[in-house]
Image (cartoon, rainbow, N blue to C red; front, side, top):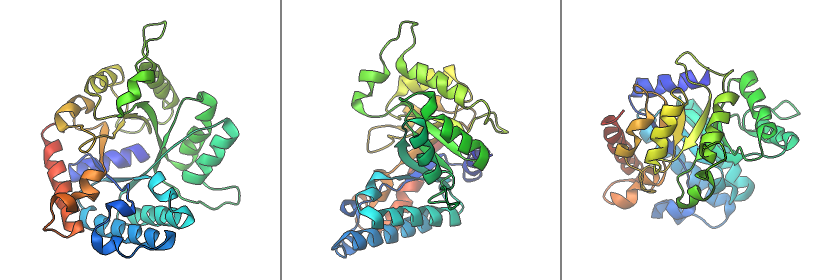
Length: 294
């Protein structure tokens, strides 16, 4: 099962890091950014950057997360780079996560699922990521099509539960009549949705997105759901730290921590290094930081 493969890769590399390739022209080093004149050249530069960073870090990290918005803004060329980056990551043995936060009414959700997890209605896979992120706020009928494809194709979901942005509490921390918060209610749904996709290690392929900046909520959710797998964004540039993540892990398992800007913009922090070498250095430093609590 895909969640077992993710855990196996984390254990093999002793590193619960997801490399976040939220790559855009603004983040590229001068030598690549100078080549850009249009969408096509932007996508080519992004793909070249991504491949070189993957070459420099694939032996260190178990997973890669691609935020679709950074590729969508370059139109069809950008989405070609999105797909080609995913395929290159898979060739390097990495678990792939598409951060697309999709959801809609059931028929449209099914089309989204076919696009990112399964096969289109002409029998061809557009992308075929191992995991995608989904938004639960349309309810169960907007999640069920994704679940069906996860069961059929051995794929996984990360459902937005408690996000890392500052205003997340405006909705997610609201108290309900039964005493639960909104994020606790959603986490309970996630546990129910994932009960038929539990792997060898006891974790389901239907997990939760929980921000690294939400230390108390991370601890509360781990206590509430001991075997729920977490995708944790917000480490580094958004203010999340390793110390805040200690409660997220269950005996060295149960979570993967995303770092995007801290790795792909490391050439800004280490100006004496080539961008791929700087990315590798940042990935090593993150692995060492997480080793204190992993």
